[in-house]
Image 1 (tube, rainbow, N blue to C red):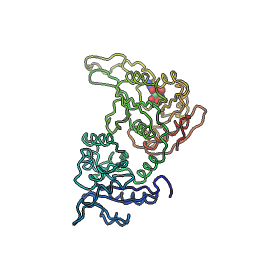
Image 2: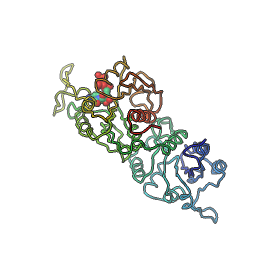
Image 3: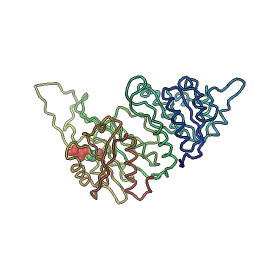
Image 4: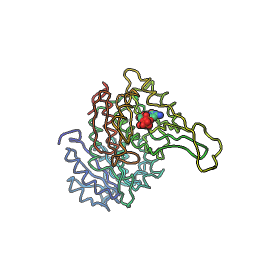
Length: 406
Ligand code: CTP
């Protein structure tokens, strides 16, 4: 296979997670793409997969210890040899060491010596992944210039299910290929993105909201960033505001009105806007300063319409600006989505169907249809939200004269 990984010198660092067994496959795949692969491992990784496996695969010795017999393993040389350092899997422990610059084993020493781009594919259990310390360390690594290959969702070694799985080897390879092959087509472009739910307060203890977790929006933010865009993310109150790359300008908002104000303020200086937020259509007509006490068998809660952000941007849109919206429908899906596309003066609408298995709120996958004002459409099969985000960004690019996608 020829391509961007051809003749690339890839130093694959393996740390002590059960996902280490996948690194053997990863090494093989990288070799099939023409890369020259060398391996370093932490001592605990060597308990999961033997260095012999990797030395056989790569036809080179594998460094595990800084000192072996009377030999000193030259981490500086290895760090300088590499065109790319890929740490996969990356455990919470090694991540913490990297974030604070510790070098008590080969992987840490190589990381500090490497002058090449560094990529990490974390792997850990759900709670370890979500821990604020881990998320803080991840942000620190990104600040230090490390590229994060997103974790995936699924069954974990502990038996729990959730985020924290190392990206599948094929996804890691795809990620690297995309990273190195792409002309960053969005360099110099400012993109506004709304994401997450909104929260409409009723009284000091209650609110109206919806099931949006902002997963699709965050995936879009990273896909835009990867293509070089300056991303402005207006983010509703999602539980998990972590794992958002520090390069993304994030504006936390809570209510539909706050989201409206922030988005309309930013839009005039933007090249495009993607409206992925699930904005409340109604908000309580009056906020009660005191907690509403129960009285009687039922309660009438008068609601009033919120402002439609997408419609406002569609109206304000100037030549050369693009607007992408989402539609979540349960019936007459296409017809309703097309109505929204025209009414809000959008250039593209992404139709989500709640009826599709594996699509919608809180899932890591999605199945969408892209609808265009000229009546055409493109069906995208069930994929991870991360992959769909890339497709949506490519579709936006294809609308513009900014550069070609792919
Ligand atoms: N949207 C918005 N501001 C609102 C409501 C919706 O910006 N107040 C945007 C959403 O982010 C999405 C698109 O408009 O990109 C369509 O949202 P959706 O909730 O599906 O449609 P609505 O226009 O609210 O229509 P309805 O709820 O009647 O289906």
